Image (cartoon, rainbow, N blue to C red; front, side, top):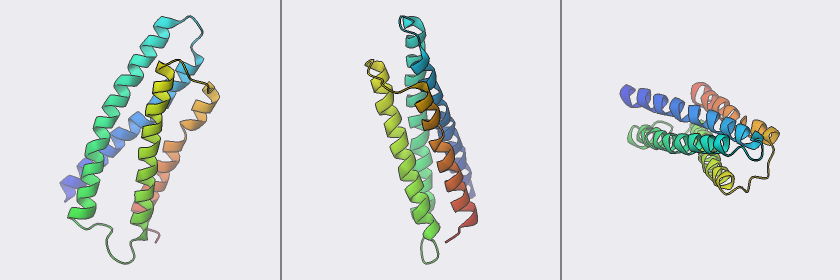
Length: 142
């Protein structure tokens, strides 16, 4: 079980690296001056590759987490309300990841209507979710 836990943590940390960095690329895309097609194309390529890679990292992170939950029974039974809250955090992360895909598509189609400031704030959501998830898993408050 410790091997499964270790690799779950590794893949989650790697997935989060992408969740932190992709919106930073969006900030830069929102700042691209009109007519700077080479810069825009380079940033879009970076964003597409990062999204693809972080999706590949999310799959084993989720799979190993399910293995721990269902296979080893972590978080089952009375007194494990923290697990329900953690699962909500995971669902919110998946929604955030999916919304990043929507935002990237808008940039690709030239339909972005949000400012670089909005993307700077948007970039803070995974930080808050990371804090919530870690506190729930370590402290098991309920």
